[in-house]
Length: 170
Image (cartoon, rainbow, N blue to C red; front, side, top):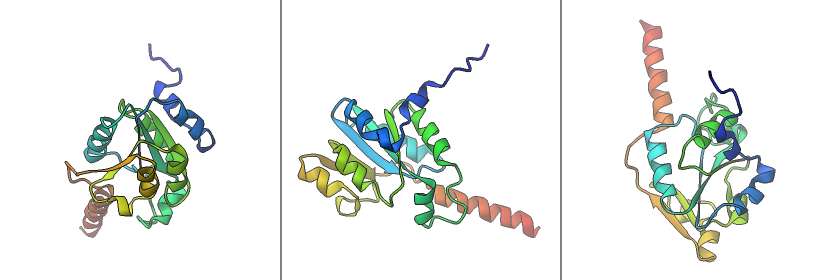
């Protein structure tokens, strides 16, 4: 028989107004990262596993749907809703807490949470990462994790669109 109880991962999803209280309960050193995570792929999960290895707990902040649209990733993005993106991330063993944010960057959340380690992908630097200066000023560190697998949701969506366009032509 299938268990229809609330999935365990849902306990790792938190609303923005509860985020700081839940983050305060996590063990330190605390690792923090953020992103859209629209279509989770091998690059994402490798990056998140590596990020988690940098501390005792990993918080992932996820752009709200409106925030994603402001990033100009395409008029039909995100493909998956915020709730769905958060659920998939929360189901990963390496993720301890998933938090939404609606601003263009999670800087306010980062400064309030004050993680020990702020992590982004290899295409970022401390100079281009919201909250990095504040984290480092308080003794934390910034880590840019090099890409191990060259994957991109935007590139995947473009490939799907090109394939669909070719089918429409034929």
